[in-house]
Length: 197
Image (cartoon, rainbow, N blue to C red; front, side, top):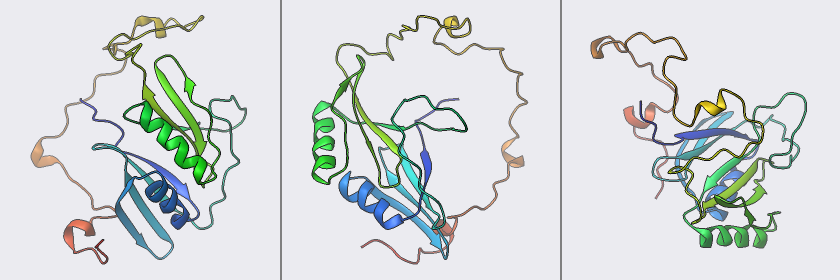
């Protein structure tokens, strides 16, 4: 298997227009797919050549309280924050300036050793981080472990360990593979109702 990135993160908004204004118009992400019908919208924003952020609009959804990035909590939780990479430190400072000009709270630039980051929240209360790599350390080329109390499993190293899970069956032959139609199939089968001009 070879991964190409995060195809998309699917998040929730109560107000798609506010969400489009923030992600497209303030942060500069292209709106590349908009699907919808009464009571349902699913919009995708291009983050990079291989990565997108998507939002479902659920008008009855309740917003979440803002939670500090990386701050431990108790009780049910499955998500802390979304961290998006930017090309360089100049881009990081530009995002910080844009957020401040639009009156969104944004942190100072934080030096994490291998990345520089700024933190903020989108209009839905989703905790977001923007990061760029530093020149001092490339953790992809030289993985590091500075946890003072790492587990035995962790200390097996950075590379995947074979034979830790049952071996899967072979995938079905090409003639035996089925695909089932999902939401958005009309993008291919019919002309979209509304095209961007």
